[in-house]
Image (tube, rainbow, N blue to C red; front, side, top):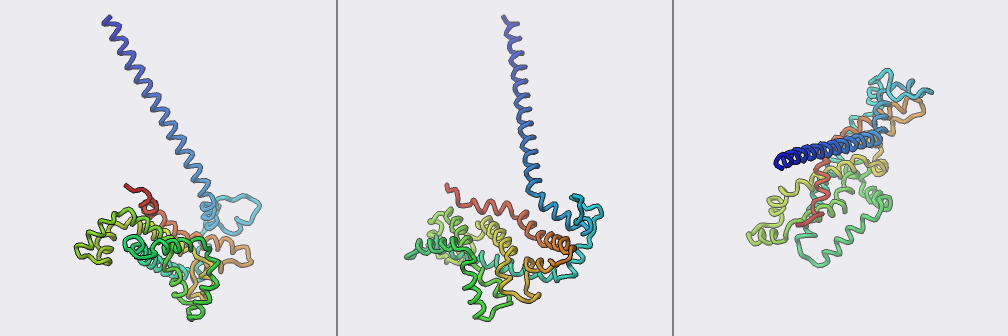
Length: 297
C-alpha cells in the first residue's frame, strides 16, 4: 500500500507538471498571437506614414513610373533641401510653435480657473452656466468662423499674432476636463483651506496645482496638437509669409510640376515630427488625464 501511495504521488506530481507546462505553452502561444496581431495592426496603421517617409527620400523620377517603388532605390535629401529653399519653412514652424504654445498656456490657465469656479465656488446659476458652456461644443467651428473673422477684422487684427491666438484662449473641452478632474477632490478640502485663511488663488497654486499634473499634461498635449494642426482659421486671417503657419505654408509647395509632390511630402514629414514627438512624450499623461475624475472612490 505504501508503494502504491508513493507511485500515486509521483504520478500526481508528473501530471501536475505536465498541466503546468501545457498551461505555460498556451500562455506563450496566446502572447505570441497577440504580439503578432498587434504588430500587423500597427503596420497597417503606420503604412501610409511609412510610405510618406519613403516618398520624402525618393527622387521624383522613381515616383512617377509604372513600377511599384515602395522603397527608394537611390535615397536622397534633395527633397528636404529644396523644400526649405522654396518656402520659409523655418519661419512657419516658429510661428506655429509660438501660436500653439501660447494657445496651450492660455487654455490651461483660463479653463482651470473657469472649472475651479464651476466646481468649488457656490453661486446662482452655476449649473446653467456649465450647461451653456457644454452646449457650445455642439456648434461646429465653421458656424462661428465668419462672425469671428468680422470681429477680428473690425479690431484691425488681421495678419497678426493676436488674430491667431486670442480666439482660441479658452475651450469648452478644457473646462469640462478640468471640472471632471476637480470633482475627484472632496469639497471639505476647500472648506478647510478657507477656514485656515487660504484665498482662492493661493488654494489653486499651493494645493491644486501640484495635484493637477496629469490633467495639465493631458490638456497640454490635446491643445497643442489641435493648435498645431489648425488650417482654416490661419488661412483666413493671415496673408503674409511672416505670419503664416506650417499647415498653410506646406500648401505653397504644391505646383503644376511633377516634382512638387515629393517636395510637399518631404515638408509634411518635417512638420509632423513635432506633433508626433509631443504625443509620444505625453501620451501617458494624456490617457491618465482623460480618465482622471472618471472613477471616484
